[in-house]
Image (cartoon, rainbow, N blue to C red; front, side):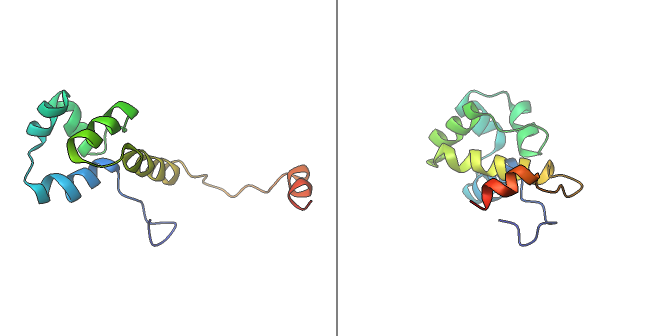
Length: 101
């Protein structure tokens, strides 16, 4: 989790690179071949130009021994940060009344 709301969480592709590929000495081409993904597509993912799909989460899970949920939650964290509202919205009155019950 980022230390502040302004600090972007890492894209899951960067997590793959920094926490798995580099430390384990796995080349992107090797992983792409192993999971049946075009090397250019894996490169786009690692460079944050492609979002994680459920299929890719399952493939990374099988190849690296991680739960697919781990990868999906990293993507959700990244998406929520990237797409956060630029301005603060007030809660609707009806919703505020319902929450106070």
